[in-house]
Length: 130
Image (cartoon, rainbow, N blue to C red; front, side):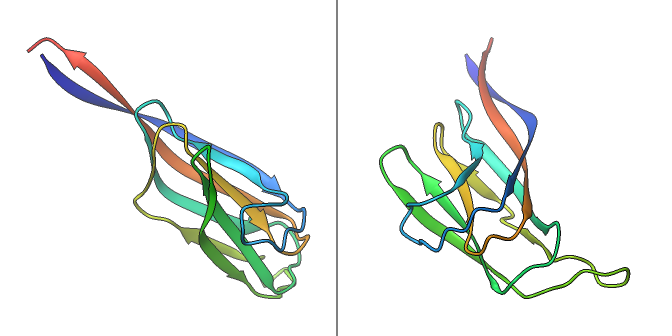
């Protein structure tokens, strides 16, 4: 017997806008990605403001079902989009992985509107005749 690994595309999206100044894993957070049975590879994450922003942070946390720990902060500048100025956006986390059942959560420090989009592949380890 051998084990094959099948990858299935998984795009996850959440919109956030509830202010949460906490860095300790408490307060309002949204679940972005839950690790699949054999794990999930996150190839990239897009943070995209949908309107004007105030200076602040978007924060990412990992919830391992026992503890919630901060893993990344993204500085958000004050920005007012116009016909020639785009709303804030950032691309993050190339090569990031989640174990089975772990959850990547996200929050915004200031009550600005963001779409958070994760481009992922779920692993599925399959037995095959050898």
